[in-house]
Length: 114
Ligand SMILES: [Zn+2]
Image 1: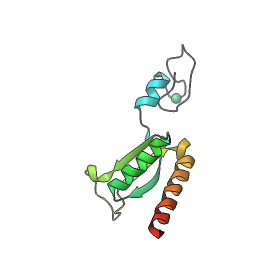
Image 2: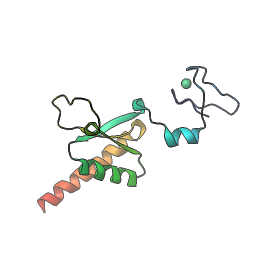
Image 3: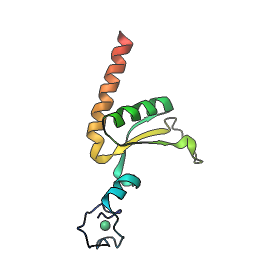
Image 4: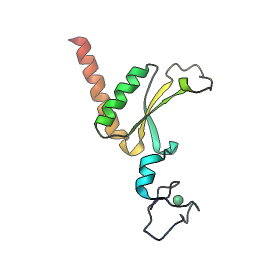
C-alpha cells in the first residue's frame, strides 16, 4: 500500500497515511494511474509537437515514463514564451532522461554535419 500524497509505503493492514491523513491505495494502482505534478520535472521544452512526440517515443523506448504537457491544448495565456510544449519525466528518471536527450541531440547534429 502507498500514500498517494507523500508516496510513503506501508505494510498491509494500514489503510490511512498517518502523516497526511490520506487513504492508502495499492501500489500498482498508484503507479499505473495517478500523476502528481510535484513528482515530474520538465526536461525539454519545444514549440514543435513532432519533436515532443519523438522525444517521448525515445524515452519510453528506454523504459522511462514520459508525459507531454501542451499549453496549446489549454485556455490559459502564454506569457511571451513560444516553447509551449513541455516534455516531462519523473524526477527519479531525470538523469537517465537527460542522458538520452543529449544522445539524441548529438545524433541530430551529426546528421546535420554529414
Ligand atoms: Zn502520506
